[in-house]
Amino acid sequence: MAQSQPKQHAPYLSSYQPSTTVHHEWRTASNSAAHLLPTLEEKARQNPSLTLLDVGAGSGTITASLAPYMPQGKIIATDISNDILQRAKQHAEEVGVGEMVETQEGNVYALPFMNGDFDVVHASMVLAHLDDPLKAVGEMIRVAKKPGGVVAMRESDLRAWSIHPEYSGLTNFNKVLCAVHMANGATVNAGAQLVSWALAQGVRRERITATAGTWCYSTPEERQMWGGTMADRCKNGSVRTKAIETRVATESDFKEMADAWERWIESEDGWFGSMHGEVLVEL
Image (tube, rainbow, N blue to C red; front, side):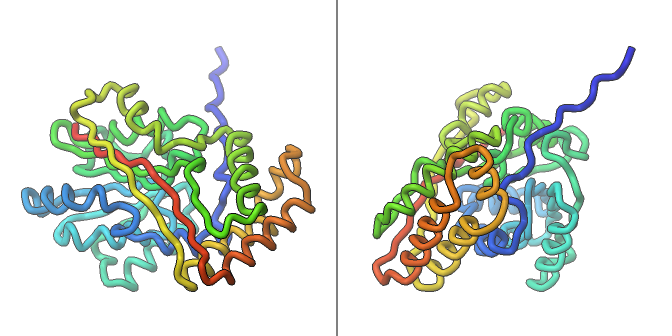
Protein backbone atom coordinates (compact mmCIF):
# COMPACT_ATOMS: atom_id res chain seq x y z
CA MET A 1 0.00 0.00 0.00
CA ALA A 2 1.38 3.40 -0.97
CA GLN A 3 2.08 5.75 1.90
CA SER A 4 0.05 8.95 2.00
CA GLN A 5 1.98 12.14 1.45
CA PRO A 6 2.20 14.64 4.32
CA LYS A 7 -0.15 17.58 4.03
CA GLN A 8 1.32 20.61 2.30
CA HIS A 9 0.54 23.63 4.45
CA ALA A 10 0.17 27.19 3.24
CA PRO A 11 3.41 29.20 3.11
CA TYR A 12 4.16 32.01 5.54
CA LEU A 13 2.72 34.85 3.50
CA SER A 14 4.47 37.74 5.25
CA SER A 15 7.89 36.09 4.68
CA TYR A 16 11.14 37.45 6.11
CA GLN A 17 11.66 40.36 3.74
CA PRO A 18 13.59 43.25 5.36
CA SER A 19 10.54 45.51 5.72
CA THR A 20 8.78 42.78 7.70
CA THR A 21 11.69 41.90 9.97
CA VAL A 22 12.03 45.59 10.92
CA HIS A 23 8.74 45.23 12.76
CA HIS A 24 9.58 41.75 14.05
CA GLU A 25 12.71 43.18 15.63
CA TRP A 26 10.73 45.95 17.33
CA ARG A 27 9.03 43.25 19.42
CA THR A 28 10.27 42.49 22.91
CA ALA A 29 9.06 40.54 25.92
CA SER A 30 7.72 43.74 27.49
CA ASN A 31 5.65 44.88 24.49
CA SER A 32 4.65 41.46 23.16
CA ALA A 33 4.72 38.91 26.02
CA ALA A 34 3.79 40.87 29.15
CA HIS A 35 1.05 38.33 29.98
CA LEU A 36 3.74 35.67 30.47
CA LEU A 37 6.34 37.59 32.50
CA PRO A 38 4.96 37.33 36.08
CA THR A 39 4.43 33.58 35.64
CA LEU A 40 7.88 33.18 34.09
CA GLU A 41 9.56 34.98 36.99
CA GLU A 42 7.67 32.88 39.54
CA LYS A 43 8.54 29.63 37.80
CA ALA A 44 12.21 30.67 37.60
CA ARG A 45 12.22 31.29 41.37
CA GLN A 46 10.80 27.83 41.96
CA ASN A 47 13.06 26.16 39.39
CA PRO A 48 16.18 28.15 38.34
CA SER A 49 16.96 25.58 35.61
CA LEU A 50 13.80 26.45 33.70
CA THR A 51 13.51 25.40 30.05
CA LEU A 52 11.57 27.49 27.52
CA LEU A 53 10.70 26.88 23.88
CA ASP A 54 10.03 29.94 21.73
CA VAL A 55 8.00 28.79 18.71
CA GLY A 56 8.22 30.83 15.52
CA ALA A 57 10.94 32.93 17.09
CA GLY A 58 11.98 34.71 13.90
CA SER A 59 14.73 37.26 14.54
CA GLY A 60 14.70 36.37 18.22
CA THR A 61 14.18 39.75 19.86
CA ILE A 62 11.38 38.41 22.06
CA THR A 63 13.44 35.29 22.72
CA ALA A 64 16.47 37.21 23.95
CA SER A 65 14.42 39.59 26.07
CA LEU A 66 12.75 36.67 27.86
CA ALA A 67 16.17 35.51 29.09
CA PRO A 68 16.56 38.03 31.98
CA TYR A 69 13.36 36.68 33.54
CA MET A 70 14.92 33.20 33.83
CA PRO A 71 18.66 33.98 34.18
CA GLN A 72 19.79 30.43 34.99
CA GLY A 73 17.52 28.75 32.49
CA LYS A 74 17.80 27.59 28.89
CA ILE A 75 15.82 28.81 25.89
CA ILE A 76 15.46 27.11 22.52
CA ALA A 77 14.27 29.28 19.63
CA THR A 78 12.67 27.39 16.78
CA ASP A 79 11.43 28.54 13.36
CA ILE A 80 10.88 27.10 9.88
CA SER A 81 13.68 29.30 8.51
CA ASN A 82 17.23 28.42 9.47
CA ASP A 83 18.40 31.71 7.96
CA ILE A 84 16.28 33.80 10.33
CA LEU A 85 17.42 31.63 13.25
CA GLN A 86 21.00 32.62 12.47
CA ARG A 87 19.90 36.21 13.01
CA ALA A 88 18.23 35.17 16.29
CA LYS A 89 21.43 33.56 17.52
CA GLN A 90 23.46 36.59 16.51
CA HIS A 91 21.05 38.91 18.33
CA ALA A 92 21.20 36.79 21.50
CA GLU A 93 24.99 37.04 21.44
CA GLU A 94 24.89 40.78 20.82
CA VAL A 95 22.74 41.41 23.90
CA GLY A 96 24.77 39.07 26.10
CA VAL A 97 22.48 36.03 26.42
CA GLY A 98 24.07 33.84 23.75
CA GLU A 99 24.96 31.12 26.25
CA MET A 100 21.32 30.81 27.28
CA VAL A 101 19.78 30.68 23.80
CA GLU A 102 20.01 27.79 21.36
CA THR A 103 18.35 27.63 17.96
CA GLN A 104 16.82 24.65 16.18
CA GLU A 105 15.01 24.62 12.87
CA GLY A 106 11.57 23.09 13.23
CA ASN A 107 8.00 23.00 12.00
CA VAL A 108 5.25 23.92 14.46
CA TYR A 109 3.08 21.13 13.03
CA ALA A 110 5.70 18.54 14.07
CA LEU A 111 7.99 20.06 16.68
CA PRO A 112 11.31 18.12 16.89
CA PHE A 113 11.09 17.58 20.65
CA MET A 114 9.88 14.88 23.02
CA ASN A 115 6.67 14.96 25.02
CA GLY A 116 7.01 17.18 28.08
CA ASP A 117 10.46 18.59 27.24
CA PHE A 118 9.76 22.19 28.31
CA ASP A 119 8.57 24.03 31.39
CA VAL A 120 7.29 26.90 29.25
CA VAL A 121 6.25 27.01 25.59
CA HIS A 122 5.74 30.44 24.04
CA ALA A 123 4.40 31.60 20.68
CA SER A 124 3.67 35.14 19.53
CA MET A 125 1.96 36.06 16.25
CA VAL A 126 2.45 32.58 14.79
CA LEU A 127 -0.93 30.82 14.79
CA ALA A 128 -2.70 33.56 12.82
CA HIS A 129 -0.57 32.70 9.78
CA LEU A 130 -1.32 28.96 9.81
CA ASP A 131 -3.95 26.98 7.92
CA ASP A 132 -4.20 24.46 10.78
CA PRO A 133 -3.63 26.40 14.01
CA LEU A 134 -5.41 23.77 16.10
CA LYS A 135 -2.76 21.17 15.21
CA ALA A 136 -0.01 23.64 16.12
CA VAL A 137 -1.62 24.32 19.51
CA GLY A 138 -1.71 20.56 20.09
CA GLU A 139 2.00 20.31 19.34
CA MET A 140 2.86 23.11 21.77
CA ILE A 141 0.80 21.43 24.48
CA ARG A 142 2.46 18.09 23.71
CA VAL A 143 6.01 19.35 24.32
CA ALA A 144 5.10 21.17 27.56
CA LYS A 145 5.59 19.40 30.89
CA LYS A 146 2.60 17.77 32.57
CA PRO A 147 1.80 18.60 35.23
CA GLY A 148 3.23 22.04 35.81
CA GLY A 149 4.03 23.27 32.31
CA VAL A 150 2.73 26.50 30.81
CA VAL A 151 1.83 27.34 27.22
CA ALA A 152 1.68 31.09 26.48
CA MET A 153 0.19 32.36 23.23
CA ARG A 154 -0.53 35.82 21.84
CA GLU A 155 -2.21 36.46 18.50
CA SER A 156 -3.56 39.44 16.61
CA ASP A 157 -7.11 40.18 15.55
CA LEU A 158 -6.74 41.83 12.16
CA ARG A 159 -10.29 43.16 12.42
CA ALA A 160 -9.30 45.24 15.47
CA TRP A 161 -7.27 48.06 13.93
CA SER A 162 -7.80 51.69 14.96
CA ILE A 163 -6.12 54.41 12.89
CA HIS A 164 -5.96 58.19 12.81
CA PRO A 165 -6.00 60.01 10.46
CA GLU A 166 -8.39 57.51 8.90
CA TYR A 167 -7.30 57.84 5.30
CA SER A 168 -9.37 55.69 2.93
CA GLY A 169 -6.24 53.95 1.67
CA LEU A 170 -5.47 52.70 5.19
CA THR A 171 -8.93 51.28 5.84
CA ASN A 172 -8.85 49.69 2.39
CA PHE A 173 -5.45 48.15 3.15
CA ASN A 174 -6.86 46.51 6.27
CA LYS A 175 -9.71 45.02 4.24
CA VAL A 176 -7.29 43.76 1.58
CA LEU A 177 -4.93 42.30 4.19
CA CYS A 178 -7.80 40.41 5.84
CA ALA A 179 -9.02 39.09 2.47
CA VAL A 180 -5.52 37.94 1.45
CA HIS A 181 -4.98 36.35 4.85
CA MET A 182 -8.17 34.29 4.47
CA ALA A 183 -7.34 33.41 0.85
CA ASN A 184 -4.08 31.91 2.14
CA GLY A 185 -6.01 29.72 4.60
CA ALA A 186 -5.00 31.77 7.63
CA THR A 187 -7.12 33.31 10.40
CA VAL A 188 -8.00 36.99 10.75
CA ASN A 189 -9.32 36.68 14.31
CA ALA A 190 -6.82 34.26 15.82
CA GLY A 191 -6.56 36.24 19.05
CA ALA A 192 -10.25 35.77 19.71
CA GLN A 193 -10.02 32.01 19.15
CA LEU A 194 -7.14 31.10 21.46
CA VAL A 195 -9.40 29.93 24.29
CA SER A 196 -11.42 27.87 21.82
CA TRP A 197 -8.32 26.18 20.38
CA ALA A 198 -6.99 25.30 23.83
CA LEU A 199 -10.36 23.82 24.81
CA ALA A 200 -10.44 21.81 21.59
CA GLN A 201 -7.11 20.26 22.61
CA GLY A 202 -8.61 19.00 25.87
CA VAL A 203 -7.53 21.77 28.26
CA ARG A 204 -10.06 22.46 31.02
CA ARG A 205 -11.43 26.01 31.01
CA GLU A 206 -10.26 26.69 34.55
CA ARG A 207 -6.68 26.04 33.40
CA ILE A 208 -6.84 28.88 30.84
CA THR A 209 -6.27 32.54 31.68
CA ALA A 210 -7.38 34.84 28.87
CA THR A 211 -6.39 38.50 28.51
CA ALA A 212 -5.96 41.12 25.77
CA GLY A 213 -2.91 43.14 24.82
CA THR A 214 -2.25 46.01 22.44
CA TRP A 215 0.35 47.60 20.24
CA CYS A 216 0.39 51.36 19.71
CA TYR A 217 2.48 53.44 17.30
CA SER A 218 2.45 57.23 17.49
CA THR A 219 5.96 58.66 17.82
CA PRO A 220 7.78 59.66 14.62
CA GLU A 221 10.06 56.63 15.00
CA GLU A 222 7.13 54.25 15.57
CA ARG A 223 5.21 55.69 12.62
CA GLN A 224 8.25 55.30 10.39
CA MET A 225 8.76 51.70 11.49
CA TRP A 226 5.13 50.55 11.19
CA GLY A 227 4.01 52.75 8.32
CA GLY A 228 7.18 51.95 6.39
CA THR A 229 6.57 48.24 6.83
CA MET A 230 3.00 48.57 5.58
CA ALA A 231 3.91 50.85 2.67
CA ASP A 232 6.55 48.38 1.52
CA ARG A 233 3.99 45.56 1.60
CA CYS A 234 1.91 47.66 -0.77
CA LYS A 235 4.85 48.00 -3.16
CA ASN A 236 6.53 44.58 -2.93
CA GLY A 237 6.14 41.08 -1.60
CA SER A 238 3.75 38.18 -1.36
CA VAL A 239 0.77 40.04 0.13
CA ARG A 240 0.66 42.34 -2.89
CA THR A 241 1.24 39.46 -5.31
CA LYS A 242 -1.52 37.27 -3.88
CA ALA A 243 -3.99 40.15 -3.69
CA ILE A 244 -3.49 40.96 -7.36
CA GLU A 245 -3.59 37.28 -8.36
CA THR A 246 -6.88 36.74 -6.53
CA ARG A 247 -8.28 40.07 -7.75
CA VAL A 248 -8.73 41.37 -4.24
CA ALA A 249 -6.92 44.57 -5.26
CA THR A 250 -5.31 46.17 -8.29
CA GLU A 251 -1.94 47.83 -8.81
CA SER A 252 -3.76 51.16 -8.70
CA ASP A 253 -5.29 50.24 -5.33
CA PHE A 254 -1.85 49.42 -3.93
CA LYS A 255 -0.47 52.74 -5.18
CA GLU A 256 -3.24 54.54 -3.27
CA MET A 257 -2.62 52.45 -0.16
CA ALA A 258 1.15 52.99 -0.21
CA ASP A 259 0.61 56.74 -0.62
CA ALA A 260 -1.79 56.72 2.34
CA TRP A 261 0.74 54.98 4.58
CA GLU A 262 3.40 57.50 3.60
CA ARG A 263 1.02 60.37 4.39
CA TRP A 264 0.28 58.74 7.75
CA ILE A 265 3.99 58.51 8.57
CA GLU A 266 4.28 62.27 8.06
CA SER A 267 1.11 63.07 10.06
CA GLU A 268 2.11 64.58 13.40
CA ASP A 269 -1.17 63.34 14.90
CA GLY A 270 -0.74 59.87 13.37
CA TRP A 271 -1.81 57.08 15.71
CA PHE A 272 -2.30 53.35 15.26
CA GLY A 273 -3.62 50.80 17.74
CA SER A 274 -4.27 47.06 17.43
CA MET A 275 -5.70 44.49 19.82
CA HIS A 276 -4.41 40.98 20.47
CA GLY A 277 -5.73 37.98 22.34
CA GLU A 278 -3.53 36.29 24.93
CA VAL A 279 -3.79 33.05 26.88
CA LEU A 280 -1.80 31.26 29.54
CA VAL A 281 -2.52 27.53 29.63
CA GLU A 282 -1.46 25.83 32.88
CA LEU A 283 -1.10 22.09 32.38
